[in-house]
Length: 378
Image (tube, rainbow, N blue to C red):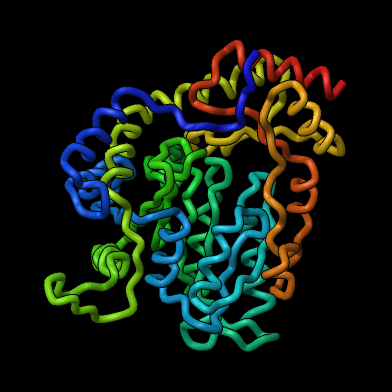
C-alpha cells in the first residue's frame, strides 16, 4: 500500500477550472473578482454579513487582535494547548500571553479562566488588571481544537463579566456549528467579538495558505480590510493614513478557495464517516462535544505512554501521524510568561496522537491504519 499521509488537500477539476480563469485573466495577485467572491462565500457560509480575506490564519489572528484593542504591555489570555500561531500575534501587538489549561475537550478550561480572572486579577472600573504585575488584561483567545467547539457560553459570560474582548481562533473549525444551547445554529468564529479562520494546506478547505476574519460589527471588518491592504486612502497617489500590512489574499488563492467550498459538505461527511469507521474497528478516538456538529478536522487517539512508539511504528508501515503541539509555556519565546494551573494539558500532550484523516482517505486506508494501531498497541 502507498504511504497514507496524515492530512493532505483534496482538489480536482473544479478548482483547476477557476484557477485557470484567474491565470487567463492575469488577475493573480490581490486584485481581481475572486477575492470579493470568496469573502462572500465564507461570510454566507458562516452566517456573517461580511468576511475579510487575508494571507494566512496568523494574519487573521493579528488583524482581529489589533481590532480587539490589544495594546503594548497588555496581557492576553490564551490556551497553553494550541498551535504556536495562536500566541505569536499577541506578541506582534506588543502584549504577552497568560496561559490557561485545557479541559477534556482539549479546549480552554472555562473554570480556570474564571479562577484566574477572579483570584489573580481585579477590576478597576471597566478594565481588568492582573494583581501581581499591575498589567491590563484586554482579551481572551479561545481555540476550537481539532474542530471541536470550546464552551463559548461560559467563556463569553466570563469575558463580559471582566470586560474582555473575545477573539475566537477558529482556524481548525470551519464547518463546525453548535446544535444545542444559546448558540444553536451558529458557526464557530461568530459568537465572540471577532473570529479568525485558516486555509492552510492541511485544513478542511485550503487555498494553499490564507485566512479570513469576521467581526460582530461591520466597522471592524471594514477597518481590518483597510489595514490589511496597506491602509491606503488614495490608491492613485499612494496616501496611507496609518500603519498597514500586506495581508491580503490573492485572486489565485481565492479562486482555489471558491472551488474548495463547493465541496465542503462532502468533505465533512467523509471525515465523519471515517471517524465513525475507526470507532467501529475498535480505535477509540477522543469524542467531540455533544453540543455541536463538528467538522471532524483531526482525529485524536490517546496512546498513553506509547505515544512516541506508535508514531515511529506507524511511520515504518507507511502511515503518517503526529503528536499534539508542544505546550506554549515550554517554548523558548514564552518560558517567562505566566502559566496558570496547567494540569491537564501536559497529560494530553504526552498521550495524543493524530492519525490519518484526509478527505480523500478511503475505507481500505482506514482499515489498514486501524489494524496497524491495534497491532502496535497490543
